[in-house]
Length: 122
Image (cartoon, rainbow, N blue to C red; front, side, top):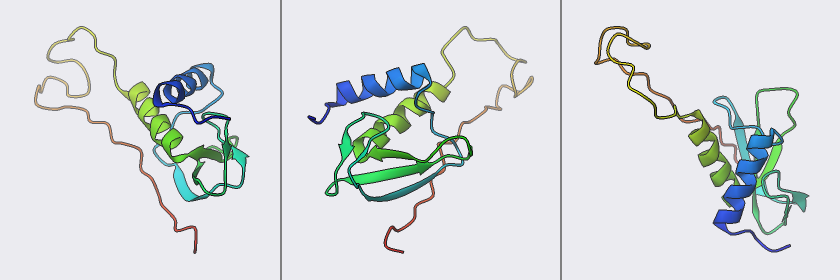
């Protein structure tokens, strides 16, 4: 199989996230890096060969098996997952609404996913 371009990769990931066949990233996920062993990538479906860096993502849910991804697929998956977590632009509800109450100086901030790295040689 040929290597997908950025546009094709992103479209595939969006479709799988939308269909629910690929979970979004989680705040408490663990990510391990190593080399592929010809397993299929959960994002693009193509094989991850032994010369390619593979990311294995372990989500907190015991119902979800670890995911295997190419490096570029992992980056695109993280970006798409983050974009789904951002609030959609809409009308300004005005002061006094939301988590900050009546204090317009209080804002809710979202934190990017925390990633734990492990050296695959250990």
